[in-house]
Image (cartoon, rainbow, N blue to C red; front, side):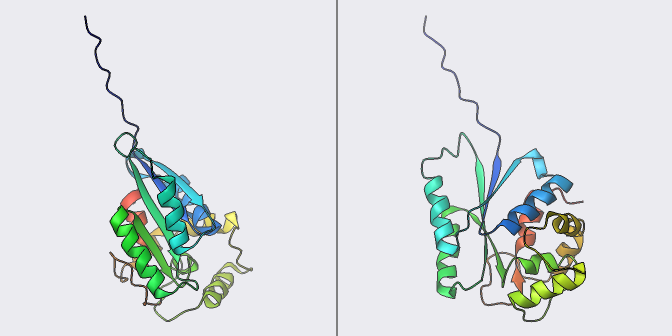
Length: 193
């Protein structure tokens, strides 16, 4: 009598987010704890302290031998404009499209998304200006890793979604300032009311 072939049971789908810095990680984990993830998928957020193409290459190498059929993973790369050249960002966008990764981008920095939790931002802005505005709203100096601050911020995620609604969704616009498509990540993966 021949042995029955056992079918490998696949793992539940996961969402893996790779960020440049710690702020994005703290924000996403705090939001996950507040409202949860759609379909109860597992969300893993990593802060890799790499930028642009370097971050993409790191992620690409990490999943080189990954079996996506057995263990499905949606991969998201979160980057800022910072001092990255537009042509490098265009290369990053194309590589993410080829690899079926979701690219989340903020110009000039992630703090734009945080400020959208309190007010509309429709004017050209700088990193310093965004941090100044956040400090004024807090009544104290903004610190990128202040977990209490992020607990306050995520309570207003619906305000941020509304304030960001006018920003073009889809492929990131690297020239536009202010710009973020962070709302795409939230709308696609988080339990929105």
